[in-house]
Length: 217
Ligand code: GRF
Image (cartoon, rainbow, N blue to C red; front, side, top):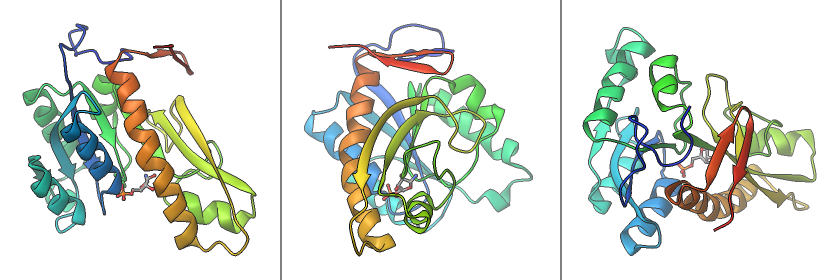
């Protein structure tokens, strides 16, 4: 288990953190991260986009940002483990320090989770452990909670169950629809995710059992 920006050999990553973003859809989180990397606000290099949906808009965003993309169709492989072995090779080839799941709509197997445990994070549109799964915002709205939010967590083998690094609340407003709520959640995500990646780059995130501590600057 290696929290923080460490390589698989346990060395501190020299300089910029080399990250891979996994996404399946629009990629607004990818964009926020790529923009901050390009402007120097974040000391990271976005080395790779991994996308499991040919045609997803995030692929266009990667092209514009000059980030190489590996796009694949899961149905071309016999099993999840088969394509994850290919992905693991890509991550190793590019010496990826941190894997950032940003709307990657698939559960991962031990093939990827074990070698990257503590160095793979996800963002989820609810205050976990409430409303895990694919419709976090919709489920919170339908349940009738007054406050929902955004969670960034380490990835483990469960569905949105890994150790929590950061959470931000998003109040539900009178008359909210799924779309208006998701828009406000996205605004929070675009700020929170780069901030957490910055903490990782600075080596300030410590993971012990299920507990995560963020060290002061
Ligand atoms: C985000 O709401 C994220 O929390 C969830 O999937 C969505 C991805 O949005 N995991 P985008 O593709 O980054 O715009």
